[in-house]
Amino acid sequence: MNSTTIALVTGANNGLGRETVRRLAGLGWRVFLGARDAERGERAAAELAEVGLDVEFIELDVTSASSVAAAVAAVGERTDHLDVLVNNAAIGGTRAAPPDCVAADFREVFETNVFGVVEVTHTFLPLLRASSHPRIVMVSSGIGSLTLTSDPARPESTVLGLPYPSSKSALNAITSQYARALPDFRVNAVDPGYTATDLNDHTGVQTVAEGTDAVVRLASEGSGGPTGGFFDRRRPVPW
Image (cartoon, rainbow, N blue to C red):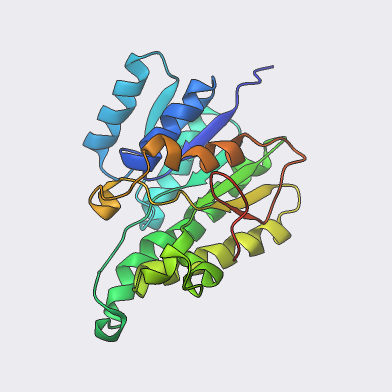
């Protein structure tokens, strides 16, 4: 019996997603690199495969139900189960101040950061249920924490915005609900920290390796590991 752990990472052609794929594949796992841009996704997967990692590209636009359905069919043709799903795909949206935001500013952000996560998770549940130890990792953010953003002593409180922070707060609630509804799974959210990625024009102070520490740890947890929690690379994060 093949005991290789099989994972899928969304939004993985660059940044935190690509680094997560690289690190999980570096553990000897078989990893599907999901990306909506086929050219960039295939290039990223090929680069990782060239250094001996077991990485395969899967075209996956989390905002398209037909793309998600095609992706699960493609994965299902190559394996009969999925052990780990990392919901990493996200966009930042407008940087307008809260008083200047309008409802339209939320739609694209929530399509990717919230609705896309639900669509992907729901569609891949049959393959995850076929695993003996299914794990789901939601890539959230510290600015989705109501506790941290309400604390003047925390840097998260200095970030003012509506669509992106609220999308991550919603994702945290979704994580908690999935964890309770799927007791045989390990479902957790992670705060990568302020990591240098395209999302922040590479102004972050952490490397992508540091930013993926919590993702890799939660993805690698054993069957007795935590579920329904929110963690950064060092400790639990308050909701």
